[in-house]
Every structure is written in structure tokens, then in C-alpha cells.
Length: 297
Image (cartoon, rainbow, N blue to C red; front, side, top):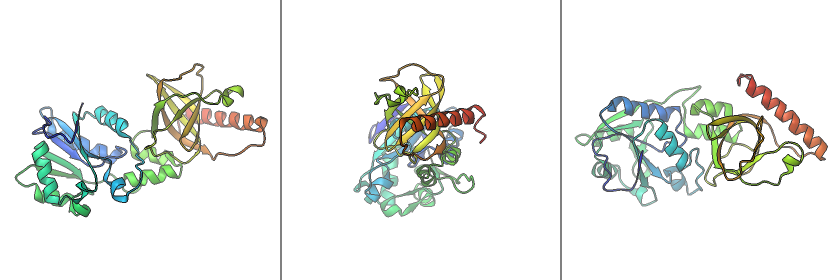
């Protein structure tokens, strides 16, 4: 998969392109990519046109907190069969582009044959351009296809998924994503307290621009290379500690993926190590029972 950053000479003319923010690449986003693939068939390339940083964070002047950071987004799009990603650098100057000027930029930079967007897509200054405006402005330049939202107990959206994660409801968030919400990172050396109590953990710091679920204890899956292990996860702020079930090795410096399956409980303070040890053992037993019965609880 090729990556283009504000390139004026990208070799992508005549492609079928999906446009959007695509934070999370949830089931609705995946439907847009599938539509692009169906239009392209076997003869045309599929591209994703998106923005960095995402417009929401620039327009709100807040620190980015992504559902999918850049490297995750690129891996997910590649797994969906996308041939290239084109990033527009988004800043407040870019945000002042009138809708017609944005259409001209798309046409001159990428010269797509087809553009696919969700029905809630907006563009141009103050988000004044709608998906149907794109259809109107693009006549004679490229074809436009509008995909309706995917419904699952309501409309699937990145905002809804963020809210669920911040409430700790990773089960519902995962249903909307179509996969388990995850964090990638390198294993770092921790304080070793878990190991001294008989519950060794792998530790990692989440990326600073990654949105994290509500602090707590979670049932988790941990991908190490091609192997997946069950785990009991402790998360407070950006520190993630996971006790891997049936795994007895060190992973310092290795990159792993930790996926959130279900929130078990809040973080609590315990009066002594004996009480803490019992609580950890209970957490592990609960996680083990949940994960081994097929996540049906």
C-alpha cells in the first residue's frame, strides 16, 4: 500500500477513492470501503483520502485523541484491500477552503474516476458542503457515490464509539467497530510488584494521541507475533499492565497488541498486599472464566 502526503504528483489518476475522517474504521467506514471495492472491480485501484490531523481536533482546538492512530489506520486499511492512502494536511487555513475549491483540489491532485462518501460527509469552510453538494459540484469531474449509515441499535459513528469507550463499555464499542478495540506498543520494564506477588505482567505505555477506555480491570487478548493469549488487564491513565494467562516469558522491547474484551471492575485501593493479592487472583479467575466460555457473558 502506498502512502501520499500532500503529493501533487501521486500516481493515482482514475482510481476509486473513499473520502472521510475514518477514525476507528468502524463498520460504517468498512461499508464505504466495500462500496469502493465493488465499483473498482478487479481493474481499478482503491484509495482512501483523509486528513491529518483530523478536522474535528483542529476545528475544536483540542489535543488529538484518536480511536485509530496513524499506524493503526494504515494497517487496517491495508487489511481491507486499500491500495493507497492520500493525506491532506489539515489546518485552519485548509479549513477555510470553499466547497468548490476543495473539489478543484481533489480533481487536480488525484483526478479520481469515482468518489465514495458516507451520507454525513461534510467539507469546505464551516462544513458547508454536504455529500449531496459533492455530487452537485463534481459533475463532469468524477462520479460520486453516497453510502447510507450502518445501523446497530442506532447509527454507528466514531463519536458514539468514543462515548462508549470512555464509559468502559468496550463490549458495545467492539460491536460497532467490528473488532476488539486495541492498543499497540512496545513492552517496557515495570516496577515488578505483580511478579513479586506471583502475577507477572507485561507493561506498555499507550501512544499519547490514543483514546483510552475508562480506567479499570479488563479481560483482554494479547497478540504477541502470531500468537494470541488471554490476559487480565489493569489500566490507569496511559499505563497498561497485563497478566498473560498460560504465558511465562519476558517480552521487553517487543511490540504487542492489547485488545479490550470486557471491563471487569473499577480500580480500587487495598489496605495491604494480602488483600490486593486475593483481589488479583479473583480478577484472573473471572477473566479466565469469561474468556474461556466464549465471551457470551
